[in-house]
Length: 291
Image (cartoon, rainbow, N blue to C red; front, side, top):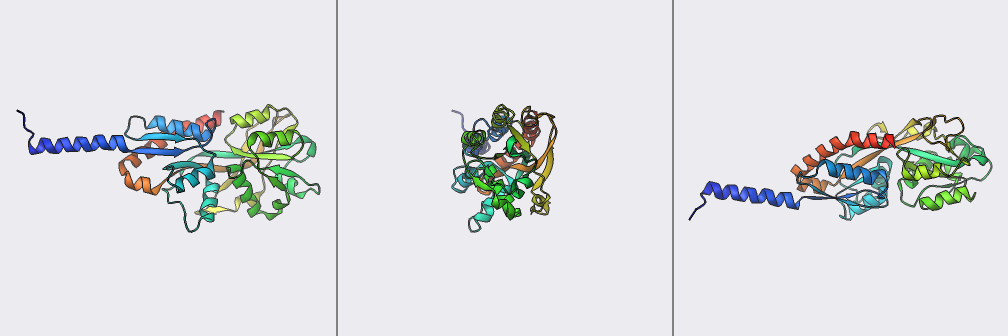
């Protein structure tokens, strides 16, 4: 009968340990809605590390704040969020901050301020300067869009004069089309599914510039968390009609957070994940830009 030497026994144990590691390392990744950029980003990261001993489970969520709340509860090991939402969450939870690895920058998201043409404004500053009472739907409660609007009102309290409400995307669009609200805003990559739906609503709506330089004052480790960029001309057929001109607006980084606890328990898997994120990032950025 064949007998294992001490060397063979050790080798057997090593192989068993490696097999156990391959089976046990899982990453629960909080994304967003199944049709959004966060979910698609999760799919690409999952694809990049397939068959590399890290099993990624994509969890559909309500977005930035929901992702961080789930991470705090241990329901997710990682999640996507806007950097301003991350800072807002940490500020609200001074005694129970999320412990995460350095946020991994994926791409920029654009603030889209969409208003009825008949209210006659061209920039966000006019929204607060007019004597008329304007109303804004800032996305669902706890969404990245809602958090960004809250950040704007902290940077310039004059925007608190704008009547603001929260609503799910479909209801927000209906409120503006029906004239019950003046504007809606969404923070998203260009030409997302929802933004294309808004664009298809016709020429009664238009994109408004969000170019108040006061928004550039908030910084994270010395760098502004917002920047101002152009939405390229002709990105939206109706919202930029009739001339198709460029529209200046705020951009904010979309980042991936990784739990420090998960990272500490799975050092080798963390290296695999980070390399996968690096490979996925240019593909994700190309996808977001090309939508």
